Length: 59
Image 1: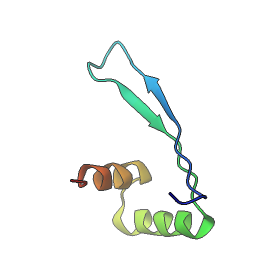
Image 2: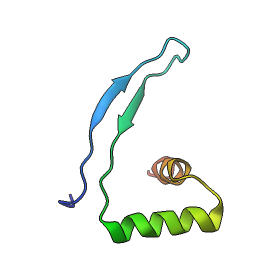
Image 3: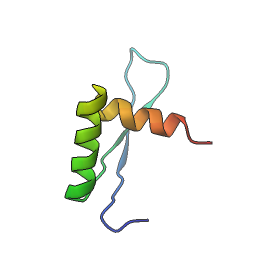
Image 4: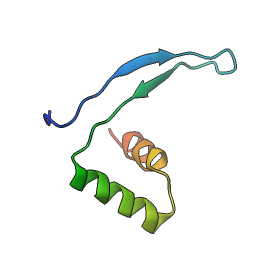
């Protein structure tokens, strides 16, 4: 695991949703954050959507 990357999980259950949500905080080095921002600008997607799509593509 990259030392610059930290994940923090906490339960965020709401009464409106049947499945529990987890909050993830991701610390990125500035160059990786800039790459993500640039990609988001090019695709018109939010960072949340980009990360969610990458996670959903995992085996």
